[in-house]
Amino acid sequence: MPALVNYRGDDDYHTGGSLCSKDSTRLLSIFGSPCKRQRISGSYSFFLEEEKKPSIEVLPDELLYEIFRRLPGGQARSASACVSSRWLTVLSNVRNSEMVHEPSNDIEMVQENDGFLTRCLEGKKATDCRLQSVVVGASARGGLGKLSVRGSNKVTKLGFTAIAHGCPSLKVLSLWNVPSIGDESLIEISKECHLLEKLDLSHCPSISNKGISAIAQNCPNLSSLTIESCKNIGNESLQAIARCCSNLQSITIKDCPNVGDQGVATLLSSLSSVLKKVKLQSLNITDFSLAVIGHYGKSITNLALIGLQNATQKGFWGMGNAKGLQSLTSLTVISCYGITDLSLEAIGKGCSFLKQMLIKKCCFVSDKGLISLIEAAESLECLQLEECNRISQQGILGALNSKLKSLTIVKCMGIKNFVQETADLTECESLRSLTIRDCMGFGDTNLAIFGKLCPQLQNLELSGLCGITDSGIFPVLENCQAGLVKVNLSNCLNLTNKVVVDLARIHGGTLTVLNLEGCRRITDESLASIADNCLMLNDLDVSKCCVTNNGLRCLSEGVQIDLQILSVSGCSKISNKSVPFLKNLGQTLVGLNIQQCNLISSGLVDSLIENLWRCDILY
Image (tube, rainbow, N blue to C red):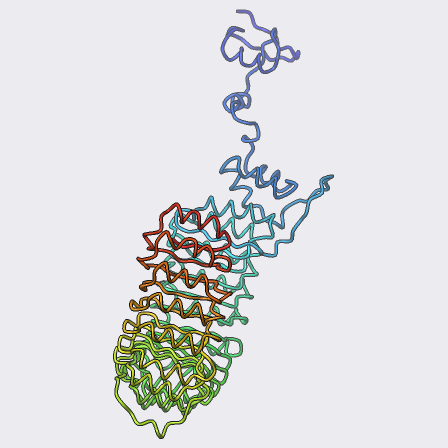
């Protein structure tokens, strides 16, 4: 076949092949030339292979990046992110500082990225793609301020790189049970999110000292740090925090085996002027750390020491005797065998402004130590004792000879129901709140003593006490001069209607909250008395009581005008006939619990929901 001369007139020639070949036909259709053969170069071959795709997809990521950073606003960016995962990835990595805001005829509101939004991703919803979507969406809506990722192994550095680039306003970051996140992700956050104030890490085994050190060096505003069950975080991290984070006010360290005295001591001594809240739990620290706390903790207001098995009496005694905890107002000590009577006395003397104290599962604390604490800590107002079985009635009565405003006793099995002479005891005029819960030996005799010594009670909780009866509670009701406001008698199985009738008659003008859950001998008579006398009641719980539709009728016709929360859960005698009464009560209700009321049909439940649209109904 003769050679064909190129139509452009140069010296190139094309030989062989028919004009009707497949490739020629495609080229002719593209270029619109029915009579001339075109040269096929390598670049045209690439074009032919890609011609089925939209032309913009041929562009490399660098050019897409330049296009996307010039998009006019958040709506355009969000729409573009929906096209493909590739576009989403490119868009999510465009920093806010790199956006080009070109003049436009459209009027668009532009918000500063001050970190207004909060996002929480859990389980399967926590992926890199979702994080990238959060970045694109948040950039035009005030910026992301708080991010929480929980229970996921699908989040990687890719997602957190996007968060770092697109959310420089991030102030709070919480990671819980995210084993796939390591130091690289925290390093990316530290490079961009310099406004970070709160970091919460729990069960993140891939994060080590390297990641925490990067946060410390680049996030000077860090004020709150929580590290829990992170096995690769140790003393080096705390030392970095001590060097760089001069604004740290709150720290919680729990179950980190590599954290010891060296890290804790460095942190507390370096930040003694700013650190206010400290919680140390299940750590391998010794008396040395407690001594440092006692000496350098001059700014600490809240201190919690939990499960410190290597700390002894000497350490706790030294912590109190150092007298450096002059700002301490709240102290929690749980499961620490080093807390003894001697150390309690030292703490009472050394912490002159201590107002609240919780002692739980400390088996060596007895009446002697409790009374010594009460006598030494003159500012103590709230005392809570839980599972301290060496505490008896004698210690509790000794605690009443003080300025206590609130006393809580839970599961203290050393308290027995016996008669004790009270002639030498003075009234505790300051006590406003008394809670006795699940103390098996506590009975009517004990309660009568409290009734005699505490005339100004306003809040009374006697929960899970099978040893008390109507006759035991009556002296308390009769002697309360201020008027009871909140009363909880839940699961006191031996109480009857008489105690409710007496309560309503004597304190109906002040009572606002009443809990009778599980009191199986309470019937409609109690509801009738409540309806007639309790003008101020706004929260009533009669779950698992023997009340019926008639009791609810009495309640709905009563004089109270402010009942907002009502629970009749597990009341098996309440049926469809109660629905009109519930609707009448619903004029003021905001919460109604009718769970396990199986005699109310689903159709009438729907009717209740429709009529009481302002009320949150559990069914």
